[in-house]
Length: 81
Image (cartoon, rainbow, N blue to C red; front, top):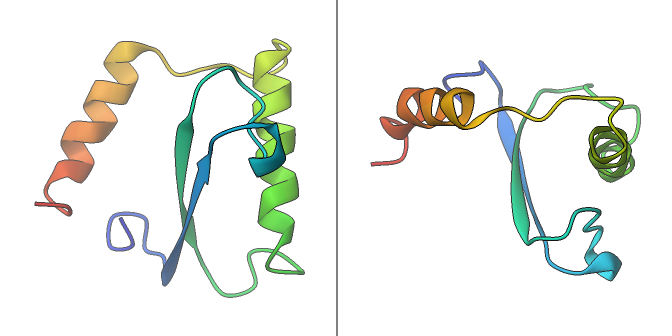
C-alpha cells in the first residue's frame, strides 16, 4: 500500500503471457509502490520487472517463501479491506 511503503503512487502490472512481460510460467501481479524520481523514465519500471523476474528465475535472486508472503499479506491486508 502507498501508506505502508511511504509512497505517493502505485504501479500495478498484471503479466499474462510473454507479450505482456510474463517471464515465469504463471499469471502474476506486481504491485509496486512508487515515489517521485524513483526511475529516470517512468516506463523503466517494466525493464526492471523483467530483469528481476529473469534473475530470480535463473537463480540469481531469491523467491520469497510461503511464510514470508503470508506475513506480508497479513501486514498489508488492513490497507485493502
